[in-house]
Length: 313
Ligand code: CO
Ligand code: CO
Ligand code: CO
Image 1: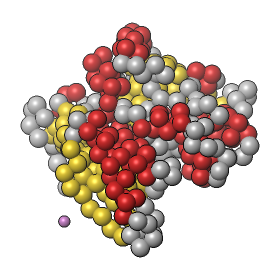
Image 2: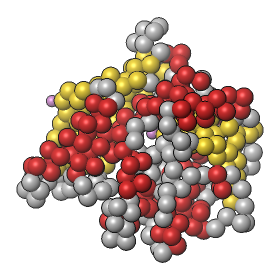
Image 3: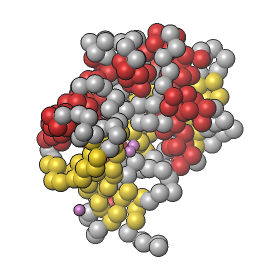
Image 4: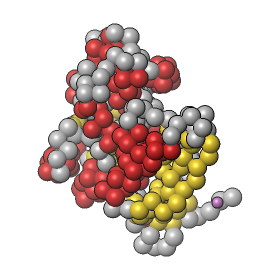
């Protein structure tokens, strides 16, 4: 049924649903969960919680509480593993300033964990993925490559100390980046997760009816990612993303296959991809740096809708 209070629904593939309660408050609702991407249950809990909260921050909203969503093989793993997962999540939600006030657990053949998060935002301050404008700068707030690195970890090609940078990045909340963009005022935002940088950018360009040019040299990439792809560590999801975006992306001939795969790498708890007026992008980058999100960088620009939704140069 049509409901005039639905401010953001399913049409634009946005990060969360937004529902207007009254003239000053809209609810922002999201749920996200996945199977472990690292071996350490505590770290997995932190990463999954940060990832679930991210959809709230990507809408320019403030989380108010969360619920656990759990699948757990109680006959195969000790309950202490689940306790550690939940402890990691509690730590992250406490950092975000919210409580976990319930949830649901089912018996499952493999562990799954995530959060349903509820947030609030002023109805006029919702930041969607559908208002990018020609002339905007595109800012990315975290490096990419976590999917490739997590796969390398699972397959034993990478030690956990080699993966430290990636794990730290995945546990980092997008709260400060979200607050910075809300303070400056931006046109559009989404977070970079399972569909990879190009998949989420494509979603934003389609929803905004615009095209983008990405400067491949400027995209921040986690240390070691290139070598892993060269050695053949390519997650299935990353290959699927690459196939999916290929009809809409034009790669300049100098772009290597390794780089193409990295740009499509499925991320967990990735950064915010922000479309901001060119006039404001320096102040946004300045504020992000002040908030110690020093990796945030301009990676491209938005233009009028063209033949290719995305050009990689
Ligand atoms: Co999202
Ligand atoms: Co999500
Ligand atoms: Co119930």
